Image 1 (cartoon, one colour):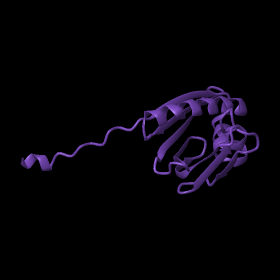
Image 2 (spheres, one colour):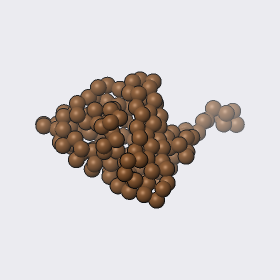
Image 3 (cartoon, helix red, strand yellow):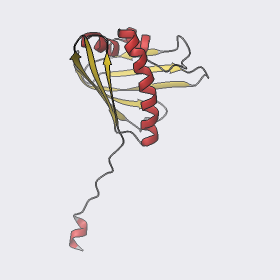
Image 4 (spheres, one colour):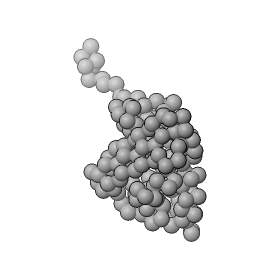
Length: 154
């Protein structure tokens, strides 16, 4: 019985996803697309977003915060935000991510940019999802966003 007090349960591993994209632009251009609000607003968002409803406020520095919002065609409002934990120009961006509707479900995004011949290899890692459904929904969303990102930076 004495051993029972020492055993601690490890928390279950939370779902994550990694998406890798080769983009047709240098890392500087891709980094700017993620870190300059006026650029982010030209590619970010789902295909069913109402035109001109995307808004982004970015304070890209360690400890800085961001907020991104948009409205879908059906009128539903979405807002996500968080804090930047790391910002290494043209190389790496790390930030927390949470939807305004579920602020307790904070997850973590790490974007790594590597020069790749004439373009950039973007490794996008989104970790600590609440559950597999959240991961799968984000995977679909990010994939469609990255199609728009690639077209924007090309």
